[in-house]
Length: 125
Length: 107
Image 1 (cartoon, chains in turn red, brown):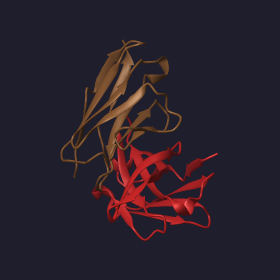
Image 2 (cartoon, rainbow over the protein chains, first blue to last red):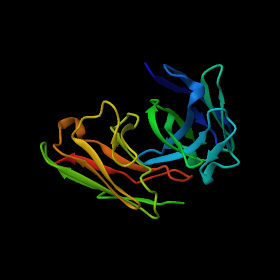
Image 3 (cartoon, rainbow over the protein chains, first blue to last red):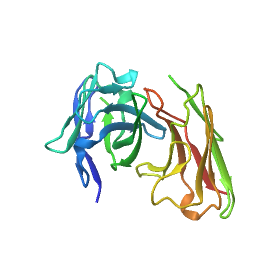
Image 4 (cartoon, chains in turn green, red):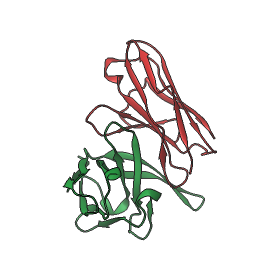
């Protein structure tokens, strides 16, 4: 069974750091790009970051560039999101998701086909 | 960035109704569009990818169409389990962006 399980969420103060983890099982982790998506309370979905299979390419939404770092360990089958300089705008449920798709005309096109249940991050003093 | 706009924001419908949700992109995204269903307290679930391909295990009453800038998600015969919020998402270019969501509620 394919499973993604996030952990590491919690309550932190503004400007503090937090590291989220996503443990993966049920598929060959090293064959897939992976993503983080977040959802602020009562709001819609916002894509945060994507990392390629081998970790060589990483992509971020502008609002987290320079503060968040996505990484992965293909031996431990784990995805990570290091979040620094957190603000109240980062308060959200954070989901990890598997990115699936195709390589066409020198470009990858991925959609998110499997999701974890999410972990909650609250930034408040 | 590519802006995604869904309409309507809320839709009231009855079991058995045919429901259509529209998603418009601010620029052409070819067919690189996905639709997700989300219920309160749950993770999103993939319904449709590449605009019209139905994900394995998704009931056949769900269908998608469109290309370039205009897309639709249709639920042909609304079931009680379908009352949820639906999001479109483009994956043509980074940053990937979602529509604001359409809540399908019971009439």
